[in-house]
Image (cartoon, rainbow, N blue to C red):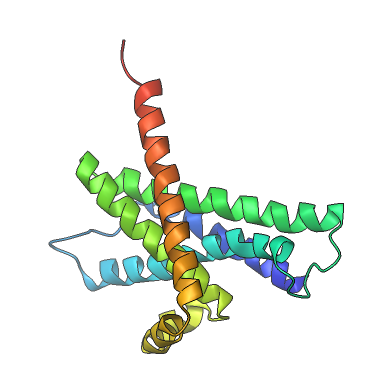
Length: 184
């Protein structure tokens, strides 16, 4: 239960760009970046995948992993609810950053693709039991994480399928918002 609560709390990472925008502290991207900007971008890239990891909680309902062996309505509420919250916060976190930085449709596609990949591979890394805080405080651990991930082609496939799914949902939302907000 503590692990589930921790996962739910970590999904709050999607709100980081909203808080930074409100405080006027959004990092610069591109030319003129300061060390502070690099640290904020690095921290966000390590934190946002926690929302995708929460989305992966649905695996306890699908796989036999000794977590939710006996499927009850309560297990569907708990794991399905956390998974839904994780999916929605992942999408919202991606959209918050893309909406802030993207100046053209081409940039929207690039930023959405990059963030979808970061979220997907980061979520899969969470399945391998790595935490984003350890990578934040000790960046060389990312090399070991990468090597462990390369050794598991099934998790790479899961990450790629998830990235395509997240990218597709965000592009669909982009298209639908253009149709809804289109002036007549």
